Image 1 (cartoon, rainbow, N blue to C red):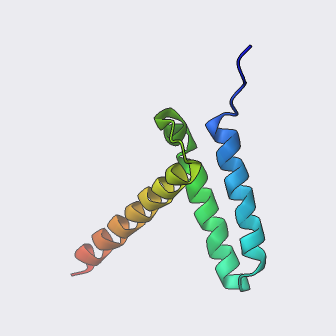
Image 2: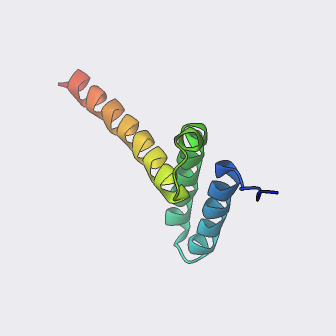
Length: 83
């Protein structure tokens, strides 16, 4: 019998839970920002799971970067409209 491999989603959730320890060391306002980052990371777990990254943190990082890029584009659009 072969071994059962934990799903990417379970492994990634474990990684994100470890960030809770890090959060305890942050100032309150920074802890709130980390909470937002964790939400952003969870937004694209399906895509990261599909990609089958060997390191779950790569998927988490890419998910966060995608969400940050969306926010930057939205702000650029607002600035362009105000000019």
